[in-house]
Length: 409
Image (cartoon, rainbow, N blue to C red; front, top):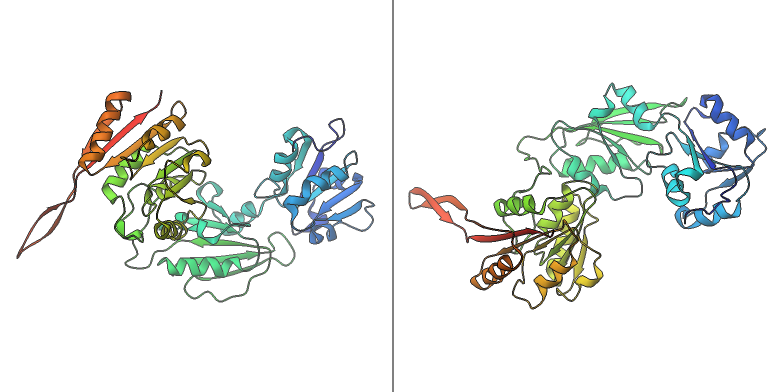
């Protein structure tokens, strides 16, 4: 909804204010607040401004997202200042207003962010610290970031976040991780509490940052964001692209930040899940005809840190027209279904990738026909695993998988 406010008027000014309140504001920020006709913000933020400031005070309604466009429209033409915590462009209202009005209609005056303040207290380099925002988001998003030796700063919506983080770490086998809770950063009531994830039982204030030094318990295997997670990481009924083949398949799909994958005939959902684990902005839709498997995919996605994987229960190609244009497509099953490959190929933009795996002669024949028609590369992957043969060890081959990969130019 760009251009809600009067385009000839002054921009909406967003002022970051820390826990130190009015006294901590820079002179430029203070001057903007003092000249405001309308002050918007949370009740807590508005209370930080002295009563002598004459502006009309408008506390945020709930839910804010739906009400914000109308609220801005209501006060169009007036000098509006929005109060925000710390840096308004770090998971804050500044980002929301910029999307709503356009960057040219918003002026942001940041204060030190909670991330900067936390790193300063801990002695951590900001560039070496992973910041994970769980503000209004599910705790499962933390999973891909839990890796041995990593330092995390977790931003939460309330004081329940530290206990939720500690529980997730313990369940993942990272109970020895050091957890530091920093509350009221920069304010007179600033406090720091430290413990381990496994033993965490301390209360936390509402305004809190949770710092984690990830330490794996003995025997805990890491789950990296590179392709080819162990097969045991997935709940499956056997319809699972095996680890080695999965790694090759994902390499050819070439996950790019922000792009969308169709995972058609998703089985356990492993291709779509690992595509999304490659980067936080990667998106995927898992299409699965079996209701039981569709439910299983959702569970796998949540457990492996990509709860926003979209799962569509239905038959391809019937449901593909309502998925949104893909940047890449993987076909893991149903290659012999009439019009399936055609529909997937036609949906791809220039530069889009299509990868299909086959284990039957009939499916291989489909791939051979398409390879002759549009080109690409055919690869057969054969994997053998060592296993007991009597009192000795021998190789036991898995079914070979033919992989066709092609880019549409």
